[in-house]
Amino acid sequence: MKTLERDIHTIDAQGKVPGRLATTVVHLLIGKHKPSFTPNVDAGDYVQVTNASKMKIHPVKEAKIYYRHTTYASGLKMRTLKGLMASDPSKVLREAVSRMLPKNKQRSPRLKRLTIKN
View 1 (cartoon, rainbow, N blue to C red):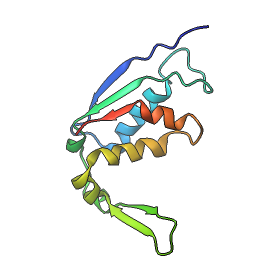
View 2 (cartoon, one colour):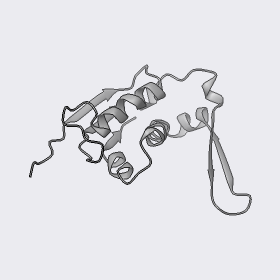
View 3 (cartoon, rainbow, N blue to C red):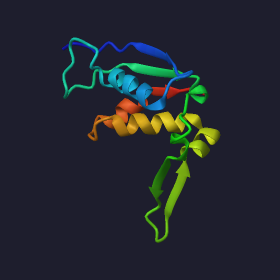
View 4 (tube, rainbow, N blue to C red):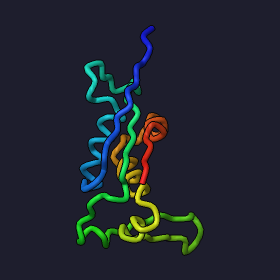
């Protein structure tokens, strides 16, 4: 049985757009850059992102709204991208990466291998 070798990739987010950065991160988390890539095996690498607070946000995208629901009546919560960047910029990138990953059982372990530093 072969053991998995996971590398650590460090990415600087300064001046980068969250969506394009998220596609790079997802590519590394899934392990598509490896020649031994198999869709049903979680052989991706660890990814560390630094300077998340210095990501470049287009002025039009600052009005983007993130929705979540508490499952109670009248429980719809809304936050803008601008407000989320002010409070916790790492949540913006983590949300983008989470939504780009395939919706299956490998999603949670892959997200655990992502660390984001402001």
